[in-house]
Image 1 (tube, rainbow, N blue to C red):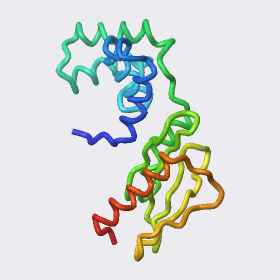
Image 2 (image 1 turned 180 degrees about the vertical axis):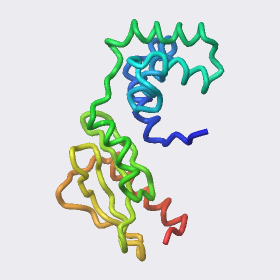
Image 3 (image 1 turned 60 degrees about the vertical axis):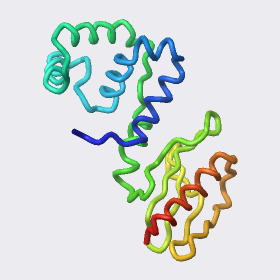
Image 4 (image 1 turned 135 degrees about the vertical axis):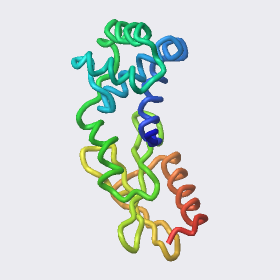
Length: 177
C-alpha cells in the first residue's frame, strides 16, 4: 500500500470544502477519482481501458460500479477542478527535490494561503513558502539554539507564524540534530 502524503490530502480537502457538505457527500468518489487522475496515480479517462483495468485490479469495485463511476465522472468532468502544471509540480516535486524535515503543508486561507515547509540545509533548517513559481525563504532555524531567524522580505500572518513556531517547537522536542 502506497503511503499518501499529507500535502496530497490537503489539496483534495480544499477542493471538497469548496463544494460544500452536500456536494462532498454526493460526489466524493468522483472527486477522488479526479484527484488520482490529475496527480497521475492512475490512467486518465482518455485511456479508458487502462483506467478500468487499474480500478478493477486495485480496488474492491465490481465492473458495473467502475462503469457507474466513470459515467458519473463524465457528467461532472466539466466542473471538476483541473490541476495546473504548476500545482502538480508544487505538490509532486517539492518534497522529492527537497530534504523536508517537516513536509510542505498549506497554511491559512485565500488570499493569505501559503505552502510552508522546513528543509534541512546544513547548519540550518530553512523555512520556505512554495506557493509561488519559486521557493521563497521565510526564515531559518539554527539547529544548535533552535532560534528562528525571520526573513525580511515577507510579511507573515499570525496563522503562519504560529504554525512555524509550533513546528520548530516540535522539531526541538524530537531533538532533531
